[in-house]
Length: 423
Image (tube, rainbow, N blue to C red):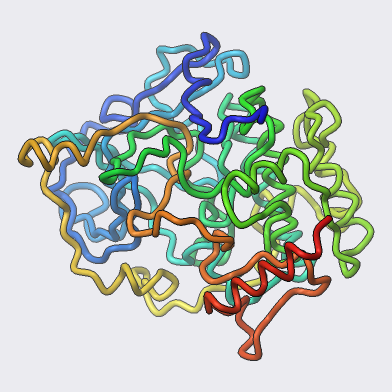
């Protein structure tokens, strides 16, 4: 085939137009305060993946004492910026000022110790947008419109800073305590902690990825507008637009599959999805130097006042029901029930254990499998238990109103139905 079955997003880092700003104490911390692990008390585990762990922490000393934050423990991280797109010089010390935006997660502190990088971020108690999507099955168009409008402004801001997101998907969209969007893991390039025999340099979700990333034929700003289209399709129909029972077939569909637009979508929604999911970059809405302007003026957003969006004046469709500032009810209990322990630094581990941690650097940290995910990737949506269902013209729901059954038998039958319905 004319695509890379195992694309490694690092390829573009080697091009000369790219500047890599390592995230570390020098590039992140503004004040004179010396920060270290001793300044934070571990409270809860919020998530875990190939990249490391995310904890809820409380600052116990210095400035912001008593405040709740999220702490990501990684091997190493950097923000990768396209120099053509930015007026900033390599010497710019503080990358955070560049990425500050109402709809982008705030990075507060960074420190390194024992071979690991600790990033302290604002704690977003609303959890992942995809938890709400999972619960609802599909979003009404007004609901999708709200989230998409906030996401568009965040992407435009990153693009102005020379940062391309590349990995927009429901898991990367968090909600704050009021229900507004916060993008996380943007433009980051991190070292992956490889698990045993896992050889994918690029594991995890590819359903939202632009065709030109998969064929390694480009990685301009327009890749994010394709992903926005895939995300919009998922919000309105219950699954991403191109899915199949394995990676190879999914990539084939992204590159050549027919876009099926359900009849219950409004004309405006169908038109916008069609214009965002153009395989030819030059035809894709948002591919001109004006970036997101053409998307914002599309009829789907006709009722949106963009000044109200950026000032967070729009009423969020879901307001998380929270009891306190450190409420973890919107996170997966699989993680929050665990005892929070920061694992010992791998450099102190035995040599055989060290082999497990052969890291490699890559862009978009969330393009990875959860460490405990089985090797065989069946035709499951990135959201747990949801099946791809393009044979159906209406969103598939079981009698309990959840998205889809998790039963493997139903799943295999479904795939037969879906596959037999395809030419």
